[in-house]
Length: 181
Image (cartoon, rainbow, N blue to C red; front, side):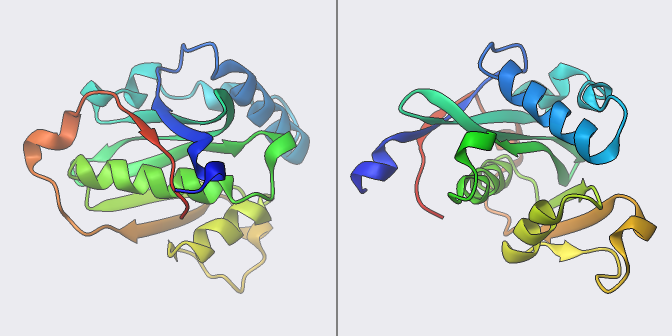
């Protein structure tokens, strides 16, 4: 592990953790500026408990020297599928591959909890997210040649190698050193 990698740690936290608020606020502001209106309501669309292990979900923060710089979550979509949600990188830390690290860690956690498929949607005005998911092996469930504005939410999926036993679906919270993708 390089010194740079040692500075990064993933932590599993509840939505109520105070370190989550500034990042979700910034994500809501960004959605509002890209799509108009107040997008903060979209971030409260699902009950917070859906992002906890007992309910089949997780919320991860990527900390750099103890400070949150990126994060993401998943919730149970169906018994075999986790839905990725709320993936973000703080605006001061973009273009460093942090979202790729977050997606990779969410995939790892989902796999260990027994999920076999990941599903997500991103907005048509988020070309960075679309590019991230294409670059990390997600299959678009839409016509990639169509104008994204005519499609609406852009759905993706990725099948995971199944390595976990059913009893691992609700593993306890974890803290783990982040590695390079």
